[in-house]
Image (cartoon, rainbow, N blue to C red; front, side, top):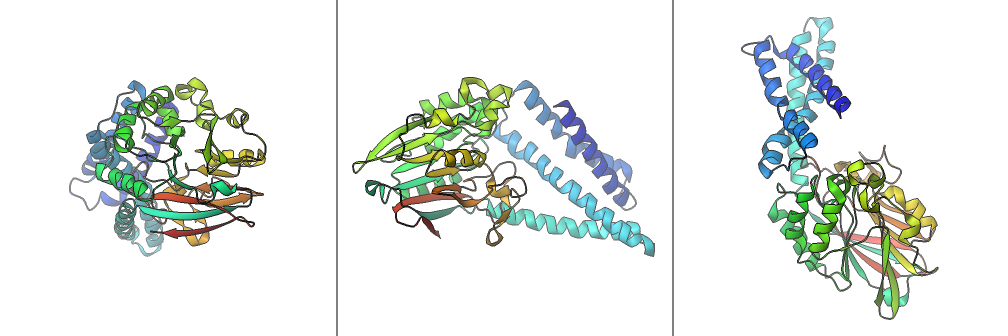
Length: 387
Protein backbone atom coordinates (compact mmCIF):
# COMPACT_ATOMS: atom_id res chain seq x y z
CA UNK A 1 0.00 0.00 0.00
CA UNK A 2 2.85 2.39 0.84
CA UNK A 3 4.44 1.72 -2.54
CA UNK A 4 1.17 2.43 -4.34
CA UNK A 5 0.67 5.69 -2.42
CA UNK A 6 4.23 6.87 -3.14
CA UNK A 7 3.85 6.17 -6.86
CA UNK A 8 0.48 7.90 -6.94
CA UNK A 9 1.93 10.98 -5.22
CA UNK A 10 4.89 11.11 -7.63
CA UNK A 11 2.47 10.82 -10.56
CA UNK A 12 0.30 13.64 -9.19
CA UNK A 13 3.29 15.90 -8.54
CA UNK A 14 4.64 15.31 -12.05
CA UNK A 15 1.31 16.22 -13.64
CA UNK A 16 0.95 19.37 -11.55
CA UNK A 17 4.49 20.46 -12.42
CA UNK A 18 3.69 20.36 -16.13
CA UNK A 19 0.33 22.08 -15.69
CA UNK A 20 1.81 24.63 -13.30
CA UNK A 21 4.66 25.51 -15.65
CA UNK A 22 2.11 26.36 -18.34
CA UNK A 23 -0.33 28.24 -16.11
CA UNK A 24 2.12 30.09 -13.84
CA UNK A 25 2.67 33.05 -16.24
CA UNK A 26 -1.05 33.75 -16.69
CA UNK A 27 -2.83 32.97 -13.39
CA UNK A 28 -2.94 35.54 -10.57
CA UNK A 29 -0.49 34.59 -7.86
CA UNK A 30 1.53 32.36 -10.18
CA UNK A 31 2.98 29.28 -8.49
CA UNK A 32 1.29 30.09 -5.18
CA UNK A 33 -2.10 29.70 -6.82
CA UNK A 34 -1.04 26.54 -8.65
CA UNK A 35 0.35 24.93 -5.48
CA UNK A 36 -2.80 25.87 -3.53
CA UNK A 37 -4.99 24.29 -6.22
CA UNK A 38 -2.84 21.15 -6.19
CA UNK A 39 -3.10 20.84 -2.40
CA UNK A 40 -6.88 21.25 -2.43
CA UNK A 41 -7.28 18.75 -5.28
CA UNK A 42 -5.00 16.19 -3.63
CA UNK A 43 -6.24 16.56 -0.03
CA UNK A 44 -8.92 13.82 -0.40
CA UNK A 45 -6.06 11.32 -0.75
CA UNK A 46 -5.73 11.53 3.03
CA UNK A 47 -9.36 10.41 3.38
CA UNK A 48 -8.71 7.56 0.95
CA UNK A 49 -5.65 6.36 2.86
CA UNK A 50 -7.41 6.62 6.21
CA UNK A 51 -10.27 4.52 4.87
CA UNK A 52 -7.89 1.73 3.88
CA UNK A 53 -5.74 1.78 7.01
CA UNK A 54 -8.50 2.22 9.60
CA UNK A 55 -11.38 0.48 7.79
CA UNK A 56 -13.70 3.41 8.43
CA UNK A 57 -17.08 3.20 6.76
CA UNK A 58 -17.38 5.97 4.19
CA UNK A 59 -20.60 7.94 4.23
CA UNK A 60 -22.55 8.97 1.15
CA UNK A 61 -21.25 12.53 1.57
CA UNK A 62 -17.62 11.37 1.63
CA UNK A 63 -18.04 9.18 -1.44
CA UNK A 64 -20.03 11.73 -3.45
CA UNK A 65 -18.45 15.05 -2.57
CA UNK A 66 -14.90 14.19 -1.53
CA UNK A 67 -13.72 11.00 -3.20
CA UNK A 68 -15.63 11.23 -6.47
CA UNK A 69 -14.27 14.74 -7.32
CA UNK A 70 -10.82 13.49 -6.34
CA UNK A 71 -11.01 10.65 -8.87
CA UNK A 72 -12.36 12.95 -11.57
CA UNK A 73 -9.36 15.23 -11.04
CA UNK A 74 -6.91 12.31 -11.09
CA UNK A 75 -8.37 11.12 -14.39
CA UNK A 76 -8.14 14.60 -15.91
CA UNK A 77 -4.67 15.51 -14.64
CA UNK A 78 -2.51 13.23 -16.83
CA UNK A 79 -4.58 13.94 -19.92
CA UNK A 80 -4.31 17.69 -19.41
CA UNK A 81 -0.60 17.45 -18.64
CA UNK A 82 0.12 15.32 -21.72
CA UNK A 83 -1.94 17.54 -24.05
CA UNK A 84 -0.28 20.67 -22.65
CA UNK A 85 3.19 19.18 -22.99
CA UNK A 86 2.58 18.11 -26.59
CA UNK A 87 1.19 21.53 -27.47
CA UNK A 88 4.17 23.25 -25.90
CA UNK A 89 6.61 21.04 -27.80
CA UNK A 90 4.78 21.75 -31.06
CA UNK A 91 4.89 25.50 -30.41
CA UNK A 92 8.55 25.71 -29.36
CA UNK A 93 10.00 26.02 -32.90
CA UNK A 94 7.83 29.12 -33.37
CA UNK A 95 8.60 30.65 -29.99
CA UNK A 96 5.07 29.91 -28.82
CA UNK A 97 5.67 26.98 -26.48
CA UNK A 98 3.79 28.31 -23.47
CA UNK A 99 0.93 29.81 -25.49
CA UNK A 100 0.44 26.67 -27.63
CA UNK A 101 0.59 24.48 -24.52
CA UNK A 102 -2.10 26.52 -22.79
CA UNK A 103 -4.37 26.53 -25.84
CA UNK A 104 -3.96 22.79 -26.33
CA UNK A 105 -4.65 22.17 -22.65
CA UNK A 106 -7.76 24.36 -22.72
CA UNK A 107 -9.12 22.55 -25.78
CA UNK A 108 -8.39 19.21 -24.13
CA UNK A 109 -10.21 20.34 -20.98
CA UNK A 110 -13.34 21.27 -22.96
CA UNK A 111 -13.30 17.97 -24.86
CA UNK A 112 -12.73 15.92 -21.70
CA UNK A 113 -15.56 17.66 -19.84
CA UNK A 114 -17.88 16.98 -22.79
CA UNK A 115 -16.85 13.30 -22.81
CA UNK A 116 -17.36 13.17 -19.06
CA UNK A 117 -20.91 14.49 -19.41
CA UNK A 118 -21.59 11.97 -22.18
CA UNK A 119 -20.32 9.19 -19.95
CA UNK A 120 -22.37 10.42 -16.99
CA UNK A 121 -25.56 10.34 -19.04
CA UNK A 122 -24.62 6.85 -20.27
CA UNK A 123 -24.23 5.63 -16.70
CA UNK A 124 -27.91 6.41 -16.14
CA UNK A 125 -29.20 4.86 -19.40
CA UNK A 126 -30.34 1.49 -18.12
CA UNK A 127 -31.11 -0.94 -20.94
CA UNK A 128 -32.93 -4.26 -20.91
CA UNK A 129 -31.23 -6.69 -23.29
CA UNK A 130 -33.26 -9.77 -24.21
CA UNK A 131 -31.22 -12.69 -25.52
CA UNK A 132 -32.44 -16.06 -26.79
CA UNK A 133 -29.76 -18.75 -26.41
CA UNK A 134 -30.34 -22.09 -28.14
CA UNK A 135 -28.81 -25.38 -27.01
CA UNK A 136 -29.26 -28.77 -28.60
CA UNK A 137 -28.59 -30.28 -25.17
CA UNK A 138 -31.43 -28.40 -23.46
CA UNK A 139 -34.14 -30.73 -22.07
CA UNK A 140 -37.58 -30.05 -23.56
CA UNK A 141 -38.97 -29.13 -20.15
CA UNK A 142 -36.52 -26.23 -19.86
CA UNK A 143 -37.40 -24.70 -23.21
CA UNK A 144 -38.48 -21.09 -22.62
CA UNK A 145 -36.92 -20.79 -19.16
CA UNK A 146 -36.25 -17.10 -18.51
CA UNK A 147 -33.20 -16.02 -16.50
CA UNK A 148 -32.69 -12.38 -15.50
CA UNK A 149 -29.07 -11.49 -14.82
CA UNK A 150 -27.84 -8.51 -12.83
CA UNK A 151 -24.15 -7.93 -12.19
CA UNK A 152 -21.66 -5.46 -10.71
CA UNK A 153 -24.24 -3.34 -8.91
CA UNK A 154 -21.63 -1.86 -6.52
CA UNK A 155 -24.34 -0.61 -4.20
CA UNK A 156 -23.44 1.78 -1.38
CA UNK A 157 -25.01 4.68 0.49
CA UNK A 158 -24.11 6.97 -2.44
CA UNK A 159 -26.06 4.91 -5.00
CA UNK A 160 -29.25 6.57 -6.27
CA UNK A 161 -32.32 4.92 -4.71
CA UNK A 162 -34.33 5.95 -7.75
CA UNK A 163 -31.92 4.18 -10.08
CA UNK A 164 -32.01 1.00 -7.98
CA UNK A 165 -35.82 1.15 -8.06
CA UNK A 166 -35.66 1.31 -11.89
CA UNK A 167 -33.53 -1.84 -11.92
CA UNK A 168 -35.93 -3.67 -9.62
CA UNK A 169 -38.90 -2.60 -11.75
CA UNK A 170 -37.18 -3.84 -14.93
CA UNK A 171 -36.55 -7.22 -13.29
CA UNK A 172 -40.16 -7.59 -12.18
CA UNK A 173 -41.43 -6.58 -15.63
CA UNK A 174 -39.34 -9.36 -17.21
CA UNK A 175 -41.26 -11.97 -15.14
CA UNK A 176 -38.19 -14.15 -14.54
CA UNK A 177 -38.22 -17.83 -13.76
CA UNK A 178 -34.86 -17.36 -12.09
CA UNK A 179 -32.75 -14.35 -11.05
CA UNK A 180 -28.96 -14.53 -11.12
CA UNK A 181 -26.86 -11.77 -9.53
CA UNK A 182 -23.30 -12.43 -10.58
CA UNK A 183 -21.12 -10.67 -8.05
CA UNK A 184 -19.94 -7.29 -6.79
CA UNK A 185 -23.15 -6.59 -4.96
CA UNK A 186 -21.44 -4.05 -2.69
CA UNK A 187 -19.17 -1.13 -3.43
CA UNK A 188 -16.22 -1.48 -1.06
CA UNK A 189 -17.48 -2.11 2.47
CA UNK A 190 -19.39 -4.92 4.16
CA UNK A 191 -21.86 -2.37 5.53
CA UNK A 192 -22.92 -1.63 1.95
CA UNK A 193 -24.80 -4.94 1.92
CA UNK A 194 -27.59 -3.32 3.97
CA UNK A 195 -28.24 -0.88 1.12
CA UNK A 196 -28.19 -3.71 -1.42
CA UNK A 197 -30.69 -5.77 0.56
CA UNK A 198 -32.97 -2.77 1.09
CA UNK A 199 -33.11 -2.20 -2.68
CA UNK A 200 -33.58 -5.79 -3.87
CA UNK A 201 -34.97 -7.95 -1.08
CA UNK A 202 -38.46 -7.81 -2.66
CA UNK A 203 -37.27 -9.41 -5.90
CA UNK A 204 -38.65 -12.87 -6.48
CA UNK A 205 -38.71 -15.53 -9.16
CA UNK A 206 -40.35 -18.92 -9.58
CA UNK A 207 -37.12 -20.82 -8.98
CA UNK A 208 -35.37 -18.34 -6.70
CA UNK A 209 -32.83 -15.51 -6.53
CA UNK A 210 -29.19 -16.65 -6.58
CA UNK A 211 -26.13 -14.60 -5.66
CA UNK A 212 -22.40 -15.29 -5.94
CA UNK A 213 -19.28 -13.56 -4.65
CA UNK A 214 -17.44 -10.95 -6.70
CA UNK A 215 -14.01 -9.51 -6.02
CA UNK A 216 -15.41 -6.40 -4.33
CA UNK A 217 -17.57 -8.54 -2.07
CA UNK A 218 -14.38 -10.35 -1.07
CA UNK A 219 -12.41 -7.14 -0.54
CA UNK A 220 -15.22 -5.76 1.63
CA UNK A 221 -15.10 -8.84 3.89
CA UNK A 222 -16.94 -11.83 2.47
CA UNK A 223 -18.11 -13.36 5.74
CA UNK A 224 -20.08 -10.23 6.67
CA UNK A 225 -21.35 -9.69 3.12
CA UNK A 226 -22.56 -13.27 2.83
CA UNK A 227 -24.29 -13.09 6.20
CA UNK A 228 -26.12 -9.93 5.15
CA UNK A 229 -27.20 -11.46 1.83
CA UNK A 230 -28.51 -14.62 3.44
CA UNK A 231 -30.35 -12.68 6.12
CA UNK A 232 -31.91 -10.66 3.29
CA UNK A 233 -33.39 -13.84 1.79
CA UNK A 234 -30.97 -14.43 -1.09
CA UNK A 235 -29.61 -17.89 -1.93
CA UNK A 236 -25.82 -17.59 -1.88
CA UNK A 237 -23.79 -20.11 -3.86
CA UNK A 238 -20.05 -20.46 -3.33
CA UNK A 239 -18.50 -23.50 -5.02
CA UNK A 240 -21.85 -25.20 -4.82
CA UNK A 241 -24.79 -26.14 -7.03
CA UNK A 242 -28.49 -26.72 -6.53
CA UNK A 243 -30.88 -28.72 -8.70
CA UNK A 244 -34.16 -27.24 -9.92
CA UNK A 245 -37.10 -29.08 -11.47
CA UNK A 246 -39.24 -27.64 -14.27
CA UNK A 247 -41.77 -29.54 -16.35
CA UNK A 248 -40.15 -32.81 -15.37
CA UNK A 249 -36.67 -31.66 -16.40
CA UNK A 250 -33.69 -30.93 -14.16
CA UNK A 251 -31.53 -27.80 -14.25
CA UNK A 252 -28.46 -27.23 -12.11
CA UNK A 253 -27.56 -23.71 -10.96
CA UNK A 254 -23.90 -23.64 -9.95
CA UNK A 255 -22.06 -20.76 -8.30
CA UNK A 256 -18.28 -20.50 -8.17
CA UNK A 257 -16.04 -18.66 -5.74
CA UNK A 258 -14.00 -15.70 -6.94
CA UNK A 259 -10.25 -15.64 -7.71
CA UNK A 260 -9.87 -12.66 -5.36
CA UNK A 261 -10.67 -15.03 -2.49
CA UNK A 262 -7.36 -16.77 -2.96
CA UNK A 263 -5.20 -13.66 -3.17
CA UNK A 264 -6.61 -11.06 -0.81
CA UNK A 265 -5.99 -11.77 2.86
CA UNK A 266 -9.09 -9.98 4.18
CA UNK A 267 -11.40 -12.11 2.05
CA UNK A 268 -9.68 -15.47 2.11
CA UNK A 269 -11.92 -16.81 4.88
CA UNK A 270 -14.74 -19.28 4.33
CA UNK A 271 -13.24 -20.86 1.21
CA UNK A 272 -14.46 -18.13 -1.14
CA UNK A 273 -11.73 -18.85 -3.71
CA UNK A 274 -12.89 -20.83 -6.77
CA UNK A 275 -13.03 -24.63 -6.64
CA UNK A 276 -14.57 -25.87 -9.90
CA UNK A 277 -14.43 -29.54 -8.92
CA UNK A 278 -16.41 -28.86 -5.78
CA UNK A 279 -18.80 -26.54 -7.62
CA UNK A 280 -20.11 -29.24 -9.95
CA UNK A 281 -19.34 -32.33 -7.85
CA UNK A 282 -23.01 -33.31 -7.57
CA UNK A 283 -23.87 -32.77 -11.23
CA UNK A 284 -24.30 -35.98 -13.23
CA UNK A 285 -22.92 -36.22 -16.77
CA UNK A 286 -25.35 -34.94 -19.38
CA UNK A 287 -27.40 -32.76 -17.01
CA UNK A 288 -27.89 -29.14 -18.08
CA UNK A 289 -25.85 -26.68 -16.01
CA UNK A 290 -25.98 -22.88 -15.73
CA UNK A 291 -22.92 -21.62 -13.87
CA UNK A 292 -22.59 -18.21 -12.26
CA UNK A 293 -18.94 -17.09 -12.26
CA UNK A 294 -18.20 -13.43 -11.57
CA UNK A 295 -14.83 -13.46 -13.32
CA UNK A 296 -14.98 -14.84 -16.90
CA UNK A 297 -11.44 -16.15 -16.52
CA UNK A 298 -13.10 -19.22 -14.95
CA UNK A 299 -15.15 -20.03 -18.05
CA UNK A 300 -12.61 -22.16 -20.03
CA UNK A 301 -12.34 -24.55 -17.08
CA UNK A 302 -16.11 -24.65 -16.66
CA UNK A 303 -16.54 -25.32 -20.38
CA UNK A 304 -14.10 -28.21 -20.25
CA UNK A 305 -16.11 -29.68 -17.38
CA UNK A 306 -19.27 -29.67 -19.52
CA UNK A 307 -21.05 -26.59 -18.17
CA UNK A 308 -23.57 -25.51 -20.81
CA UNK A 309 -24.01 -21.82 -19.96
CA UNK A 310 -21.85 -19.52 -17.85
CA UNK A 311 -23.00 -16.05 -16.78
CA UNK A 312 -20.27 -13.61 -15.77
CA UNK A 313 -19.64 -9.92 -15.16
CA UNK A 314 -16.57 -8.25 -13.66
CA UNK A 315 -15.17 -6.57 -16.80
CA UNK A 316 -17.71 -3.70 -17.06
CA UNK A 317 -16.54 -3.66 -20.71
CA UNK A 318 -14.08 -1.12 -19.29
CA UNK A 319 -17.12 1.20 -19.08
CA UNK A 320 -16.10 2.26 -22.59
CA UNK A 321 -16.58 0.07 -25.64
CA UNK A 322 -17.08 0.12 -29.39
CA UNK A 323 -19.73 -2.62 -29.74
CA UNK A 324 -19.63 -3.04 -33.54
CA UNK A 325 -15.88 -3.69 -33.34
CA UNK A 326 -16.27 -6.03 -30.38
CA UNK A 327 -13.69 -3.95 -28.50
CA UNK A 328 -13.68 -2.40 -25.05
CA UNK A 329 -11.16 -0.92 -22.63
CA UNK A 330 -11.16 -4.33 -20.95
CA UNK A 331 -10.22 -6.16 -24.16
CA UNK A 332 -6.43 -5.61 -23.97
CA UNK A 333 -6.38 -7.12 -20.49
CA UNK A 334 -8.75 -10.09 -20.76
CA UNK A 335 -9.21 -12.86 -23.31
CA UNK A 336 -12.97 -12.81 -22.71
CA UNK A 337 -14.01 -9.21 -22.09
CA UNK A 338 -17.47 -8.57 -23.50
CA UNK A 339 -20.53 -10.20 -24.99
CA UNK A 340 -21.00 -13.85 -25.96
CA UNK A 341 -18.39 -16.57 -26.52
CA UNK A 342 -18.64 -20.23 -27.50
CA UNK A 343 -16.34 -23.16 -26.86
CA UNK A 344 -17.74 -26.40 -28.24
CA UNK A 345 -21.23 -26.70 -26.81
CA UNK A 346 -20.53 -24.27 -23.96
CA UNK A 347 -21.62 -20.61 -24.03
CA UNK A 348 -20.38 -17.65 -21.99
CA UNK A 349 -22.27 -14.38 -21.62
CA UNK A 350 -20.60 -11.41 -19.93
CA UNK A 351 -22.93 -8.78 -18.54
CA UNK A 352 -21.45 -5.25 -18.80
CA UNK A 353 -22.62 -4.40 -15.29
CA UNK A 354 -25.95 -3.05 -14.15
CA UNK A 355 -24.36 -0.07 -12.43
CA UNK A 356 -20.89 1.49 -12.52
CA UNK A 357 -17.83 1.46 -10.31
CA UNK A 358 -15.68 4.46 -9.39
CA UNK A 359 -17.10 7.40 -11.29
CA UNK A 360 -20.42 7.40 -13.18
CA UNK A 361 -19.09 6.98 -16.71
CA UNK A 362 -20.26 4.65 -19.47
CA UNK A 363 -19.92 5.06 -23.21
CA UNK A 364 -20.86 2.19 -25.52
CA UNK A 365 -21.16 -0.08 -22.49
CA UNK A 366 -24.51 0.90 -21.03
CA UNK A 367 -25.70 -0.56 -17.72
CA UNK A 368 -27.78 -3.63 -18.42
CA UNK A 369 -30.49 -5.90 -17.11
CA UNK A 370 -30.08 -9.08 -19.15
CA UNK A 371 -33.08 -11.29 -19.88
CA UNK A 372 -31.88 -14.68 -21.17
CA UNK A 373 -34.39 -17.15 -22.56
CA UNK A 374 -33.18 -20.72 -22.99
CA UNK A 375 -34.31 -22.38 -26.22
CA UNK A 376 -34.06 -25.94 -27.40
CA UNK A 377 -32.63 -26.22 -30.90
CA UNK A 378 -30.44 -28.40 -33.07
CA UNK A 379 -28.02 -25.58 -33.77
CA UNK A 380 -26.89 -23.52 -30.79
CA UNK A 381 -27.16 -19.81 -31.43
CA UNK A 382 -28.07 -16.37 -30.14
CA UNK A 383 -30.74 -13.80 -30.94
CA UNK A 384 -31.14 -10.55 -29.07
CA UNK A 385 -33.18 -7.35 -28.78
CA UNK A 386 -32.61 -4.25 -26.68
CA UNK A 387 -35.19 -2.02 -25.00
